[in-house]
Image (tube, rainbow, N blue to C red; front, side):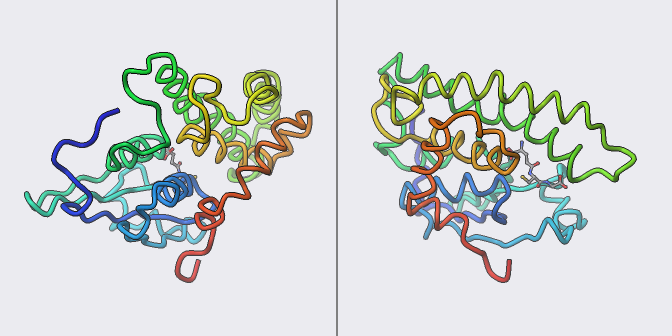
Length: 231
Ligand SMILES: N[C@@H](CCC(=O)N[C@@H](CS)C(=O)NCC(=O)O)C(=O)O
């Protein structure tokens, strides 16, 4: 991933609609890891109170979901509304040239591993967790399907946990040994594991429990889950 051509941080006004513990936590966590959180205005939005359903917010994001990053280019006076927590993290990385949270572009195997695990979180973890959330917590009782939730639980334990456990049993972070150390992939996957832990999905893996414990101790993570405004 290169840097965003010519668009240095100082040319941009960034506003992130955020509420912990939703997926906007990924973007805030990464921003703290990159040391750029001061350059992003956090706008609290209470999804539990339905603020994301207002017509004002739907105009910004018709998906009625957070995170939403508003990117205003001061030079052209144009604004883009960016959604998708994974994409926002990828964009933030590009704002900080030579950051230490991603491999160099010409390091092919590291890049392949990094890209795979960055997509693994929103692609293979979030949908299972969202199915559990909908069928165990969000939908009205008569619309819940306990078999769908149960299937998602089984798939998470048998597939996701197995894949991550195999790497982290030997290594400290998910992209190792191709890229040594903590990376943006750990933010994306770590967030999903934090969510999965709420559903007791990590109970079979002392490796993943220990990994999540290490991530939760990071200062950037702790800052990301702190309350915003009155939320
Ligand atoms: N794929 C999107 C999903 C965003 C999403 O669904 N966010 C949830 C919070 S974790 C939300 O705002 N839900 C509001 C709702 O569904 O009513 C992403 O990764 O950013």
